[in-house]
Image (cartoon, rainbow, N blue to C red; front, side, top):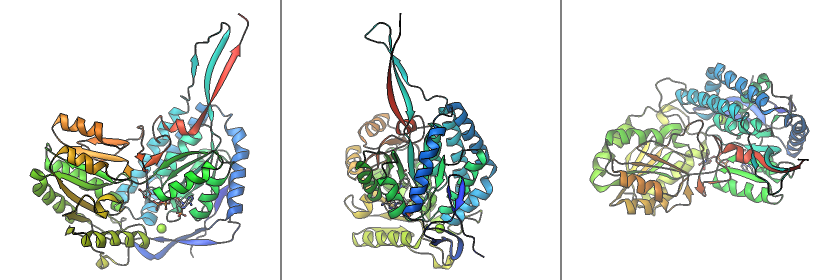
Length: 482
Ligand code: NAP
Ligand code: MG
């Protein structure tokens, strides 16, 4: 018997008003239905928004440190539930269990950091032009936040959005991605168990074009925090603009790794391969192009191909698996399409470049490395969001930087070099939100995270900057007798 799951509005588990459900399948075995999840409609979204509005009056008055205590409890619960939550994550998303465990632990760390921030929601006091007057800038909650999730990190991304919103005194309507609603339900259960009051977080599942769009359009929702594609981000930006809502958009990337006079090619290659193929390349910060000096190209390519071809692909629940299936048939076809285009544009497949039917009916695609890639080709400029790594040969740091910056994206970038001048030239001239020197694209749980150009809009999430999205300023002039 396949289980039916419910939305959670005002602390109550409710069937969708539409009466409609969609099947959530296991990408490693598409015949396995993991559960039936609500395909909610407009009335469900309105009900969730109303619950968040109603809960806002009480929640915003709870002292910050008290709100923080609940986030600490939530972090503890995440850790206590690491094993079952990680298994659900792997089953519905596909990534290897080791990565899922890491994702849950990272979510706990981010929740703990934001728990502390709830005691640091400081404003400022300014000197006054007038005697007997104090001038203060205080920070208040934004109000109701709509949180719209991607499917690639369905545990840490919700926590990254919900924890800051709650720490800062906002209430939330939480919409998981349709490919990964199960982890959303589990997170909601843990939030209730942690003691967040009814209506502080409301879970509504359903199609983004309806549920997400309606959240963005609602003038009762003061801000949308979104992670996903640049195309959808633009739609959300346009919808919120109608009522001058605030946005925090975390969008796509085309993250380069430049290798030029590296300390150690072996080390650089390891970092690159890990950052390129984790989550089957379905990461916004995946390294998705390598630019190598001509002198290092042959050796570097050889090591990368060797490492990539040895990655063990399979069902993420098997402990030895390093690369799981792609999340869906649609994503598999997108990746295949990019490889076909790349070949037509003259690229050479050095390893991978094919489906793996011998592994069963899962959405498997082999880790792929391409060379003979030209900087203007599609695979060199567009985000593939799959296990595909093109290699481009360059003759100088200037040329590398020109190519790196010649995309619509600006999320993360790496340089592997022992030349401090080249490292600093790269850090200064690259147009991305994050730069890594002799380091893959891994971020940390207390450090601002975000992108420029078409990779993002609004305050960086994670770390202290998350508060800039979640709070508004209020200026208080206070006159007293002196
Ligand atoms: P997506 O199609 O943009 O979907 C993201 C979310 O938006 C889903 O919950 C989706 O709902 C919802 N949505 C769809 N249409 C909407 C609309 N008109 N209004 C409001 N919400 C709507 O992206 P994706 O396929 O999940 O993720 C892949 C992309 O996300 C990649 O481009 C990747 O780079 C980017 N990404 C960026 C980051 C970052 O931090 N910068 C992190 C992860 C992913 P449904 O699921 O129901 O369609
Ligand atoms: Mg699924």
